[in-house]
Length: 612
Image (tube, rainbow, N blue to C red; front, side, top):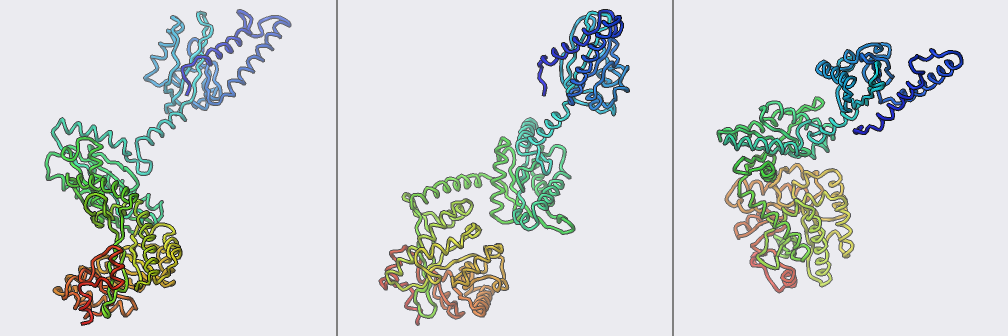
């Protein structure tokens, strides 16, 4: 954009002045006599042609000349492109009739008079002038007056088209304030408007509800339908959210599949659940994509002013916390923020920091729980179980720290260590001649989604001189159900090589027995909840019996988990489970205790009863 630099104006004035100076004083070109007249005419024409060529070579610079009555005497091609009038159409017409908007008309006429009479120059500035179509054109306009203080002053206007710059500025302003895809406010603009709404709520002693919406499994939707279809879903969702909102409500898309909406001016607490239900109803109707109906759900986190935060940042953060907790609870859940959530978040944050340091400090160890043959009472296999024993303080439960690791990249570092340590320990026990079939390790859903994880697994096993009969894998059924084709192909390769692959906690996920024929597995581990309740619950007993029967018909090994008393033991033996795992025989033990057990130095509490 042109600044207020008058060097160009002075240069233009000089060129125009030189053009006029070619004329003999008091005459027009050609009024001189004889050879002198011809010379003057030629010099005038050459000078005029050079100057005209110069002006026409500046496609973005519109130059117009006006006489003392403001009638057009010069109009270059750039002026035609900028204002829509040809030179012939503009010639002789008044400046104010051509390009001056009506509200500016009197001011322009007066400014021209003030310059001619008082010598008061018109300042260079950004203004909007009128196109022949009636539309306004943004320009930066310079003015030059020649022949000042004479009877025939001439005014030249030099206008630079600012349309592109203005358009770019509008686009930049839009990009900094709005979301490109949905045209909703972006997060920064939302926070600004939310702070204004909160200030008004304080003045009116009102409340405000903030709802944070996160579409469930949107990554899978993108993968299945493609990013273009995913974008269409987000646009349609934004349209629905925007459709019924009040003028005072504030709506934003804060990230990929996350939206926030603020409902200010709440004076009745009964309105809060109604507003939340309104958000849930938005998701109920199917979304139509290329004649295909797509059903969506979303988790909602709710924060309320003033109880859950005084500023926009605090409310958004706390609603986000509640939303994250809702996602942990399952799809379509709604969680209201409270102090307990905040305290728990703070605890988890600190625990996550401690866990990272624990990995570095070697505070993680493996314990092993034996799997006992239901027939012989012999320890067949071990399940490797991760334990965190801090240098200071009590042990931390795996149920507390493993989900933390799962939500970060830390799970991969921990998983690699578990694999390495299990292989090392298995090789050491085999070298010592201890009787043991296999050590099984658990793989989480996030671990098996890591590229190259199965190649890494096989390489580690081979590096320690082990084979498929020495190390096995345990996966939950939900992990298998959500596995893509690449993961299933990797598991099939391991299966064909002879590795044992067990479904852990079977019966607690979303699968059915019919899935078993599709999964490359060798064993089922019946979840402890069925074992616990089967002696007194006919339904659980029936499920266990069906699982054992179908598992055996499919050639799968069946393991009963969580056997803790004699009654449960007799039940799983009656059902002909192959292996038994639980506190009735052995709790998870550190490696030295396992060594003594395998060497025959330590007996399980119930091992003598197996053969009875």
